[in-house]
Image (tube, rainbow, N blue to C red; front, top):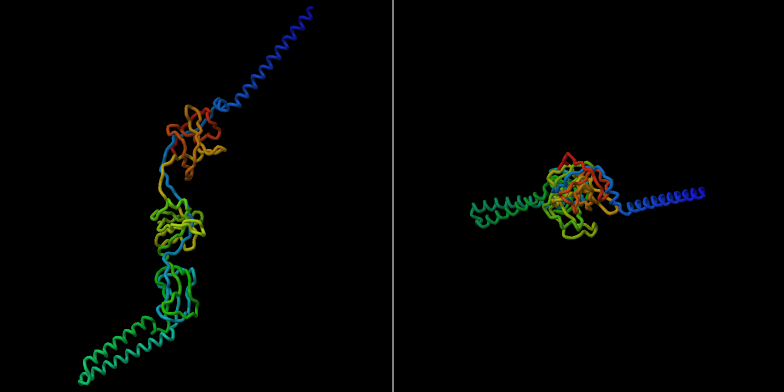
Length: 367
């Protein structure tokens, strides 16, 4: 009888232990499920050390970036006033020349020499005719009107001779000189060609005031107007920029580039840029106010860009959009609270609602 009672007691104790163990396991599983279902509560149960600083708004430049090509300034045709034959070409396309440099040598045309000779003979004849008429007038064998007619004939002959001299008919050969500092953009003749009076021999572009032709995205063209300042920089890394001014903006989209073309005038005697060079152009459109934060303060995940602010000792996630980046700073826009500090370090381990231990950044960022 005693053994029966003892066995029953042991069985009861064992059953009780099993019930307690099962209950403890169920409670632990329920706690784990609850933590998984509510991550904010789990996040709230831990804390992270972060570094913060106050938000600030700054005035930032609004810039547009375009690309273009350096061109010469105004292009002028260079020719010769009289007919002739190209005896020698002294330049090639793309060559840079100084004012007064020899561009070409022309041999006189036979017809020009004949016209000059005829004009010179006419002057000599008119001079002798005037002298003869004046002698006859002294002998009262001619009238004053005859003397006046002979004088007018001499004046006409002299004017014709002067014109032939200006045309170079008195020269066996002549040179064509550069009228200004420039670059030879094209040559219209070849050595040995005969040219007519006033015909263009070559095209010469000014280099004392060059320009840049650039293309602007159609959506951005509404922000641009003549008179805006731009910075022109060669595509080579490390090259210094050259200030310029927009002078012209076209009102249509170029069919080839699908861009709105514009022209910027470079300062006179720019030496770092040469015609044909590809350049990067930064157009200064204006300025705007924006929140400026360190670049490391902005995080990105599947939900988008965001930052963390500290409110009541807890991390508050704020969705933002990046507007502009300059060096180690970035301009952002979003539902930020200027009264709350911004987390700038330690934000990678944060979750929305997590408790934080705040360490205020002592050194102000350079502005």
